[in-house]
Length: 116
Image (cartoon, rainbow, N blue to C red; front, top):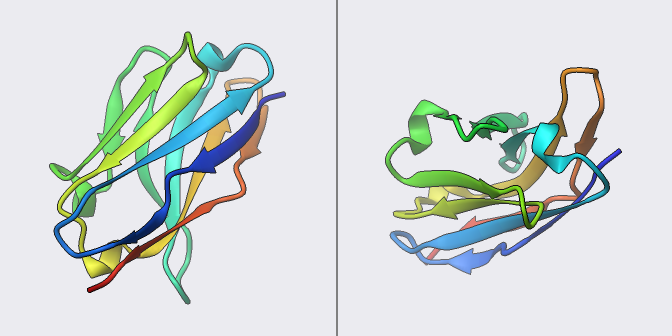
């Protein structure tokens, strides 16, 4: 089973950038598909970006061209580079790991606030 810890959230002005990181402990990190989700205040959690073990990526339409998900299987980390941030990007961001056999884990979340 993998355990996840996010970091890198904070307050940023509109147009600014932040980089979120998710550190995984446990074994077989490379076998997990990794995701970033977010939950804006008062709204449902939504999938933001996904990266497979082989490095294929997908994004929700609202962040395409602004966010980049990446992973380092040697360091057991997944990152989310967020550029051109907008107030509507304000949310708690969660790292999620899922595997073909049903094993899955959530991180505790990190708050990103985009405000002037």
